[in-house]
Amino acid sequence: PPLPTPTPTPTHTHPHTHTHSAQAMRLKQLLLAAAAAYALAALARYLRREEEEEPEEEPEDRETTTVHGVQVCDPGAWPPEGIAGRPDCPLVAVASYNTLRRNYRFRGHDWVPGRHRDFGHRRSLLLRQLESFKADLLCLQECELRSLEEDFAEPLRKLGYDFVTADPKGGHDHTKPVIFYDKSRFAMTWSKPKSRVVLAEFREKSSGDRILVAACHLQGGNHAPTRYNQARSLMKAMDSRMREYAKTPETPTPRSSSGSRSPRRSRSPKDTKKPGGPTEDLSNEKAPACIVCGDMNAFYDDPSVRLFKTGHMRRNMWNPMDGEPPRRLDFRAGHVGGLRDAYCILDEESRPFTYQYGSEDCKNKVVRMVVDYIFYAERKENVREEDGTRLTLRALRRPFGKSRRKPLASVGIPNGWHPSDHLPLAALFEMSSSPGSSIASSKVSQLPRSQAGGGGKHNRRTMAGGRGELNKAGKIKS
Image 1 (cartoon, rainbow, N blue to C red):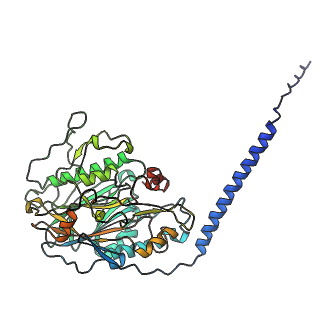
Image 2: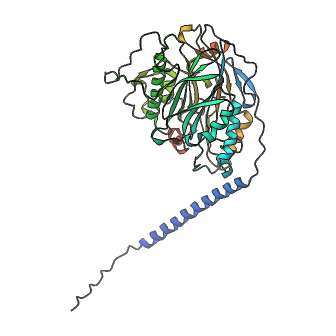
Image 3: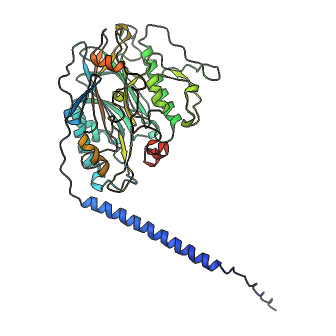
């Protein structure tokens, strides 16, 4: 016979359970309604911006001022007039620009309409900007090597440029730095491509002076130790190259915290062996000038930037706020030394930001930062000829004039007249290896370190929420 069916035990429900369940359901419905309303409002703003007519582009500002003997020019006044080089002191114009990669996805950039995201639109603006720099050495970041020929190489080749790229290590061929150089004035004599950096040496044809240039795109986000390792690797490669010109014994490597010396590595096979390369005896040649520029993804107190400024780092100089220090920390670039920030002559109010996220029109918080730099080995007073080529800063290009500051915040970038989320930097230098100094060099070199190094009001940890806001703003574009 079938077994009797057990009688279910009645469950006793707390009298307030149904009330709490109903309240949770209503709260969930309210949250979903709020999210839907927010999404609809964002969509409406986006559609309105798509339907807006493109405003006519206003001419660039043309103001020029003099700061510590250096001309500071608005984009409309660049290149500066009235500065002439000499056969023994040629001028060299250097520009650095993060162009924002072709296939950037614009996540969270609801202030950028679709037509301004299109790379065809951005490419035409980029090429117009690049031509306006009149640069002899053009350092770009976030280039995609697969489409580099179509994006930049072909049109810039028509303007007389050749180029050298970073190493597409492991098939990673996007967001790479590239150096374009005017081949009518410069010949590349040596190069050492890395993943995040391309380092190359050029010889100026009229004077024979050489210049060592590094274009960088260091690791973004809250990764100070990684950035430091990348900067240390670059400074080590530059110091190794400069050592080949040295007529003095090699500077000993400082001992690490463990007391042992770092093992000496053999030269990388990736060094490009061209005339004047590693196989040539350079001991009788003048040492080259040095320039390091690019998107460092770092504030001014970041260890990577401090290494560029001082040329050395020890364990007691590491800030605990920057995370766990790297195992190989102690370093001194004995032949390169410390470099100077070209834009350090500007005070906190006048130093321009180089990166912006957000738009006031779309009710976003506008975040502005200084993360792009041009560092150089300055020319000293009474420099000895055997010390090699030095650089004198003669002019700087502002990324934008006063009339563009408010539209940048209200409209945001990229927009109809600016194609990237970064702003370009450009500087004009005088190359010289003879004794003496110009007015500009004497005034800039006399700046105290406290002034000659300020990152500006957009370059502090307290600004934009520090490193966390840097991540939130989409700066992890590796």
